[in-house]
Amino acid sequence: MMSLIIGLSAILLYLLSAWTQNNAAAHPTSNRGYAFSLLAWLLQGAHLYLHLFTQAGLLLDVGAALSLTAWAVIGVILISSIRKPVSGLLVFAAPIAAVAIAVDAISVPAFIGRQFTPGILVHITTSILSYALFAVAACQAVLLIYQNRHLKQHQSSRFVASLPPLQTMESLLFEVLAVGQALLTVALVTGFLFLDDLFAQHVIHKTILSLVAWIIFSILLWGHYRLGWRGRTAIRWTLWGFANLVLAFFGTKLVLEFLL
Image (cartoon, rainbow, N blue to C red; front, side, top):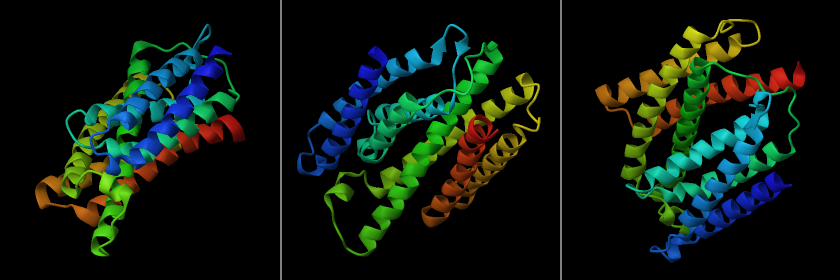
């Protein structure tokens, strides 16, 4: 019952944050959207703790993984907002986090919790954090498309006005990509070191797609810092890489838990 109350409270606060943030252009000095998201984020963390840690071990099913990833995404945005005006991303991310909590609350785990070694926990943690960072980067890429389209058509809207400037968004995009790539590298290395079944039949697709995503992001970062890639090129490569990670992580979990 406590878990349900905490989850519902977090969902309502996330939705309230998105609505408030969408109206932030009319009140540029208001931090209410940020405050609502921070409270929701703390409640979501408590909800995750109650779900993840069981007597049998760590219960990381599809619902929990989705909510944990969304929680990490919100955390990245909240921390980044301290030094850069990127809280406008909460308009996009807060409703997704609310949906993730709802999915986590109603999903029925297909297995019981498991005990993991420290090496495996490092692999799991860095994997989820890297997915979260690349999810933020993908959100930024979509918003950059939206901003560019409005600027070219000389259109204005409250939502666009609440977003950070294009240069700030693009700068943060590559910062997020660089940190996400470092974490993905650690996740892949620890996977090779500590997972005995990394190339087993049930995870081979996840391994290959994650490696493909790593290559895509490596090429993108090299192209940006060496050749000055930005704009549409950066957006396309970011979305391609993130699509591979979505298929690798959630696609594999959905197949294993619900189809097999």
